[in-house]
Length: 360
View 1 (cartoon, rainbow, N blue to C red):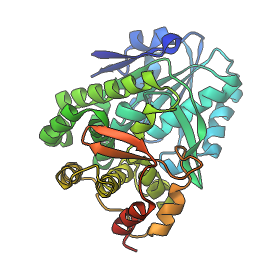
View 2 (view 1 turned 180 degrees about the vertical axis):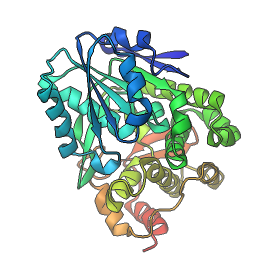
View 3 (view 1 turned 135 degrees about the vertical axis):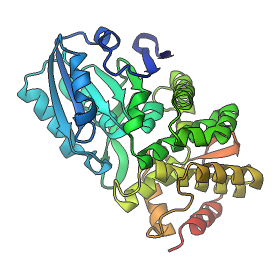
């Protein structure tokens, strides 16, 4: 087992990465300080991992709430069902929530924890690659709104993260590839060596090689933990973690939540960001082709859905948390391994990128 730490002074917490650790009581129990535990999971994960998780918590009063599975359920109505369960079982402010599932479960459970009785502890047990390498680390919690993804939420850190790479064995191929998009992102923004490793080892990840998974999860979590430690609430450098996300969130929202997976949308968004970076004179065509090729090798989309027009994309991109009064702020690339937060691009070049990718 590998252990990393997200360094946030009094709110620092460990990330445990390994195999067969989901049901290890000695990992989770030190981070539960009351007697009440509510496990939040979904209909897909519950039959696989709910009972082992409960067994590790046998000394506590354990209840569970099982949500429907899918990005389309990451909303205020579903959030309220968690509050209903907490209140029905009379959970107090010393209770702990446990998020057992992918990014949707982690985001919505963390947001519920941040708000219930003005804040109770929660623990992340991510079961998808995307959640293990990205959404479970850093304390971003949120639900979606019909007009924009993750627009209602809070920064709220977990007590610990337990990433059992064995759970990736039961992950469907499409979800696995979706998670790889976020892994690629880390190499692009500030870790050229990792990007090169991914170019050489993509087949191993697609074949679910456990050693490759463990390395990719650890490297991604370390890259993210380092950035979060510098900028917890995304006032500066942390925004770089959103490479491809402004384009990607527009695709997710425009297509309807759940139609395109988050990683699929981000993969296309990364290609769009690279294209705009090249038009901006910062990224060479050779690097653009490398970026497109690694995304193709991960069997992820490199083109936006034909249903979305450039005008629709632009409208959706205007609803983004990074935006400022002067307009849309984007994460662009100076080189592979060097991302920047920028509104210093020509609007004509942004329009040209959208026209190139949005064929309708």
